[in-house]
Length: 148
Ligand SMILES: [Zn+2]
Image (cartoon, rainbow, N blue to C red; front, top):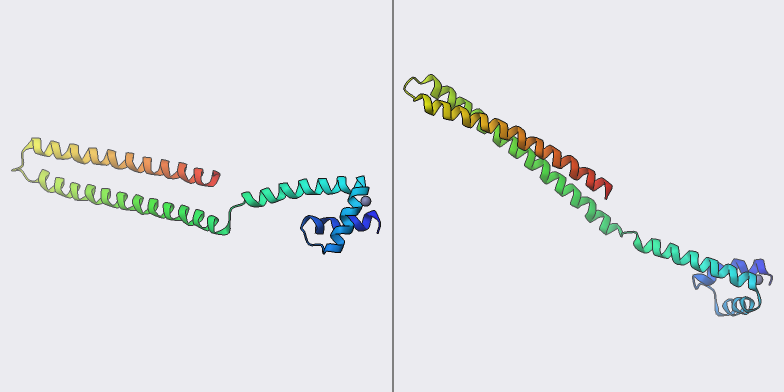
């Protein structure tokens, strides 16, 4: 056999796929041939690197958990945003109806009216602020997820 023949055996040797006779003859050749043993060394290093890369790559299961985790978090976040928005809207709507009724009622004290108006105004400010905060965190977290 000549060097090119042995080079054909090289990958099989690295993957331990040669039969005993092939292995023996390849090792005998390596002992006497600088060229082939040097090339084998290079392949061995390359194989080590590619094996390491393969090890670092997460399993399919891990990816699935990873993506379903993100999905769950996004789902919960959207649920929470809808819930808070709806709750606050209902509160404000109910509040306005109540205020409307109270303000039209001449028997209700002016201070009570002013207090109720202040509560409604406060709720409206809170609503905007919470909504902005939610949207801000949602955007930021989504960005973080993609970047990770
Ligand atoms: Zn050789």
